[in-house]
Image (cartoon, rainbow, N blue to C red; front, top):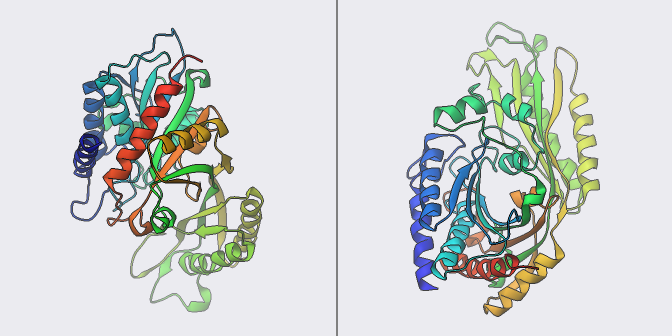
Length: 409
């Protein structure tokens, strides 16, 4: 256990160095130079554990330990390795590192599975560069078409394909994956909330994952000189956007049932101090454990936006992502609770208020997910921290679960 803990700390510290903002959190955007550094490290660790390493046309990384059963589906373990801007070192990488350590335990103990064990490191879960989020898992499962993937661009107008090629990735590699090749998917993640720490519980076995949708709202007006255009003759896109944004949180509050709404990204054009803004683009993220609540808020949001049309202002809301609430596989949940108990870990059932790649895979294979405590419930910030002892305990649980899942049925 202590050796695994030390190895986990080494991995986390190594990946933490691959950031565009040293000293100010982890900024590792998909297909960036930091992405390349992290993927090279991950691939080296996979190879060191005797895994056959390949990448797909999205840049997802797979390390496979073949099983004795020909053409059998894989038991997959993994998470993502991208970050939000100025994020933490544990959101995503903790799950990748745990998966790497499971593979290392298979090697050290000389285990030859019946079903293949496959370690997975996924791209663009956060959506920080190309929007939408969960891009790697949506691509694997066919929920993101190749045409839609190719059309995605970042805020600088750089396409996914251009960005991939810039760091030496090959976007022409196979992209989709037959669900029949996936026996199960396991993901470890930090909780990103305060529940486990407050209850002094090591492991949260995730029962369900919240439903979510993300919209991009564009408000268009008319640019003009800041000094010569009278106030009553303006079509100021930013003033209108601000009015809309200020009204949106109340929609989630009125809906209740834990419904939340966030405006997280805003771009102003032409972004000059002495120019009336003619366009504003902002995001709206809506989440709830009840799909009806999400749908209700979407309708009210669109009504709010339409109420601000006219007088030279046009506004449009476009859906970027829609994921229904997901209940994870009952048999896998039972298995993870059993292995938690056997490892003397304190555990409880928990629901996820954040979206994860596991929710995408849950429509295509049997999925299980574990949470570990987050210090002070903090995440998506440099202060994000989780105890390596908890990651090691989760690794032990996944190892025992993977041994059972990779055996013949």
